[in-house]
Image (cartoon, rainbow, N blue to C red; front, side):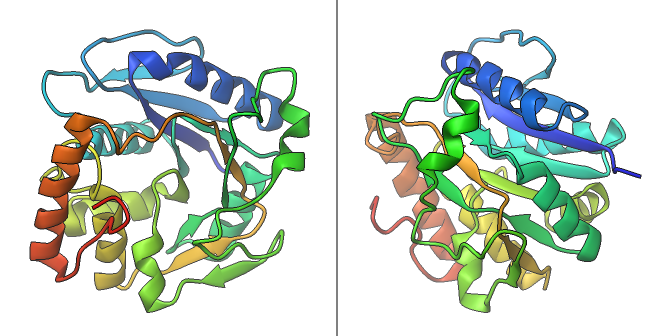
Length: 254
């Protein structure tokens, strides 16, 4: 029997169209999945065929709080597998299948698939979803095993965790929430909470798996870390991370 799968994402109002396309792609490849969106920023919005949770508010984006809210909602709504997918990410044709297979064999692990960053001249639309795999070029900074292969992360690879695309069982999500709170809400605004989550996985000896074939395709947009407000948050979050883990994350951005 196929497990109940819920895909969750975060999105501000200006990303709503991208989530609609993500939802279209999921319906194309995996029509049986449920979808949840945690609305961030200052404006609440609606999305067809997605449950929208209100994580809006003034000030810096509360990304960690929103991810926790979305993950908890999916677990409470009956998910057996929760797939976290960034609002800018479109699933490849085998993303759901490969995550499901990896977690069937390794139910106590977090599965992470390859991410291809699309260029500005590689737009994605509802009519071009079948062509996405022609653009496949996984980011070289992380392992990308062959389709169907699963590779355990080494201890020094946990810092490569990205919330852009990962999956875990609802049971393990609840365990993470109990053990270390999930994503730390001490990080406010852009940057740091992803890598902190990865380091918590390592500290709690939770396996992380590089999952071949679970490809996501990140739609192009101008770099987010260069915005003035994000630069301030990155500096503050990097200092918090350093105080916890003893090294500086996001070094290229700093």
